[in-house]
Length: 223
Image (tube, rainbow, N blue to C red; front, side):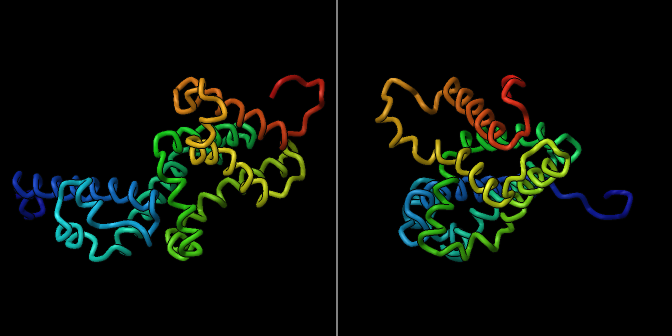
């Protein structure tokens, strides 16, 4: 017992808890890929079960319904995004530095999670965003808007429209990955998902965005 008289969990119980969380994570990973390919309407629980190696009954044990599983997929990715934002402490940095770091992190995130951008497209097309808006994803959108508004207030950014500029920045960060299978036909010699190309795209995106929002003279040099 601990000093409060409570019995500590047994090693066996801890192992069961770890197995439970690992199983749920595997189901969510498989569901994320399935929903990204087919959306809520077209996704099949059978396919998720086959990809994970568990039974349909086990999936329904953990998530109750396909809708509940779909919502948890979104909840998980939004939790991760919000955690990234909370740990970044970008509000303590000058707006220009913060914006560079957001773009760099956003592209790195997309590169590590190739299916997640497509989730949002299917959600918009099939469900008009009704599930997505329940996740609180808006916080990350507002966070980027706040950086732009802060830069305008500091006098380092032009008087851009923060709302529209945030949409455009997200498009720059996401489209490269969502459309890479189509874009690869334009330049077959370029491996768009290689580390080299992703790093190049990151720098191009940073230069493009900062070139559009920064207040600087034509002779002040490269952004």
